[in-house]
Image (cartoon, rainbow, N blue to C red):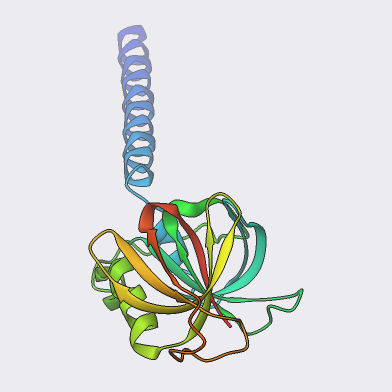
Length: 186
């Protein structure tokens, strides 16, 4: 009888040890899965979400997400005169996001995620929209994107309230993508 209880006790200990090992494996698997989630996946999981973005050279911005690309965010700005203004923000300029959902959308078939910042800037250029381009140093210039090149864009500078016309252009400035913090439609 004592041997029977001893074997039952050893069997129970072995079963408990197997459960602990399985729980540790599951926890490690979850950590490994979480380690694959990028910020862009979390941003894409919550379209139209209200968030606060801290953008280098600009500060905190209250916005609603509109779209997310591979390396950019499109948002609608809020407050302090920015209501309804479209904001194109390079992901590299974002230093913090407040209000993100905990879920993620790692699916690569989301169409806009295939396109990089240059593609988004080409759309802005095609639209001939007046924009204010903020850089990482906190400065900004206003004008119309004339050309989107390999590593920089050319902006025809003109006043905020003037359309791009030859007589209104005050010069052209070339801005490297690595210096961009935000492109705001006026």
